[in-house]
Image 1: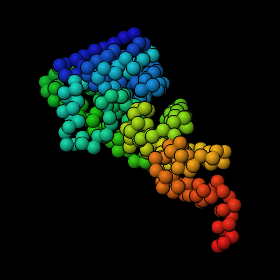
Image 2: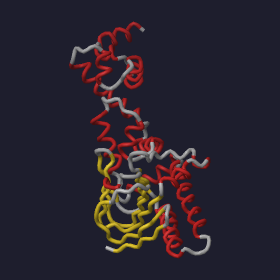
Image 3: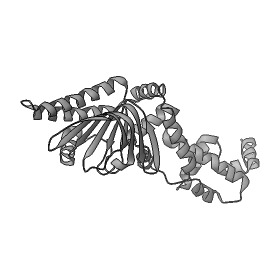
Image 4: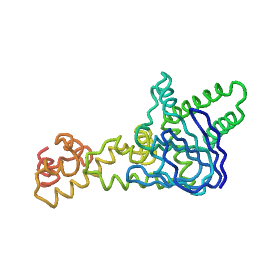
Length: 285
């Protein structure tokens, strides 16, 4: 294992080569840019295994949730004061990654990875050499990090689809599989977009676009399909009231349940349970 560490009062950077171990806890915000190796990271009770060409943003005191294996890349720490000062700048008001409690995973295409690596390399060199006006160059490079994060956060659906497709070619198909598995196990709960995105380390907007690009349907359309499918089983095999079934499968509004049911199956829950009534209505027309 080799490391090259350079620092100032507000930030420091380490260039790792073949490091294995847990990321230590720190009061700073940490950026991990992975060139080679593996990172196993815990977000809530969910673990993700990541390979090269990823950027991970870790909030203060969350480093123990991250284990590095033969890690080659940059570990960059930024003082929270500097981080929030930049984030509050008017140019960053629409920056939506939530770093208050959970790490955020950012999937990078090759050109994006090289851009971030160039930034961290420059930061390391400027800190090491401390040449004239180096502090101003560092401020510019840190600002560039945020600007590029904003660009990634605002990525269009078309570009996101390409990003996901490119990542799948090198082994990221498991991400959508994990999300679908979670939804199948928890669709009866009162799920929110923020709750789901926090669990998997996405921003809410990124998760919505990611899911749409992978499945060709809206996230909550998929959830409601799971709920309606379960409702059909209950309608056919129990005597529970329709309103009870609606709440059992995850809806908290009977009218919305009826509307979703009708949109998907072209009949109401009552007609589905009582096909003779549905047939009578058709014949009457």
